[in-house]
Amino acid sequence: MLTTIREDGLVDLQDDAGSGPALATALRTFRDSGMLVLPDVFDAARVAALRSAYDELLRAELGHDTSDRVQPTDGRRHVQMQMPLVSPFSDVETVAHPLVVRVLTGILGDGFHCSYYNSNTAFPGSTYQRVHRDAGPVFGTDLGVPTPTTAVVVNIPLCDFTRENGSTEVWPASHLIVDSAEDADVDLTTRAQSLASARMDVPAGAVVIRDLRLWHRGVPNESGEARSMLAVVYQRAWLSWRARSLRVPAATWESWPDHVRSIFSTAPVDAEHEEAATA
Image 1 (cartoon, helix red, strand yellow):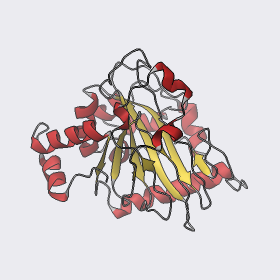
Image 2 (cartoon, helix red, strand yellow; image 1 turned 30 degrees about the vertical axis):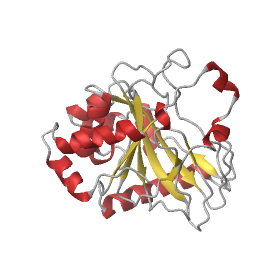
Image 3 (tube, one colour; image 1 turned 90 degrees about the vertical axis):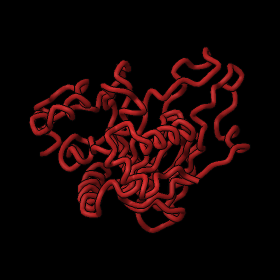
Image 4 (cartoon, one colour; image 1 turned 180 degrees about the vertical axis):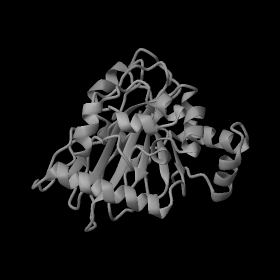
């Protein structure tokens, strides 16, 4: 079962001054399970605009490719695409929604920043990926207890995620599992067989916040339509890693208010990138 903020709790969280009971419940839920679903963050019009712009980019990316690709996690017909920071993907509502920022600040602390902007599409006929983490424990096997969350991915589904179209499989609380040296020889797909999993069945308009250490995998899409989501990674202020693909066009930087510039302060502002991305 996924950990979703109920409708009444979501209203309280939106109206909360930042430290009330609704936020405390959300943060505790995230710490316990490693993920949190916030329903109804985006309205249907915003989701439709994101999906339309995304599909156009994806067609340009794939060309005549049938998308029969194999990801590093072994899943066939799963495609990743780095996202340009242009509208609507760079809109304040998309990358710094007030509700999401409030929760991220509670998880990561002040000064968190974006380090990666990716997307994932599972095409019809996709296969199982191997179970994997997007990031391992900060101290590897040197520390025998889990650390607080240092980085999360914010998933923005661009359609309803269902069992039929391959909603992501996750292992709740697996972000708290700390490996021993012996564990290095046992892959997560084998280890996960003895643990309970859940499926990320969420409607379009929801946002899923997930600890990067959480075990998960893509699964077969048995529908007739592609299943896509945006994936924006945010991390604590003291982490310095940033994907080289994360660059901000000058026009986007100029359009952002100061609080959004702060979130993207580690990414270079690049006028040439702007021209290439919008050509």
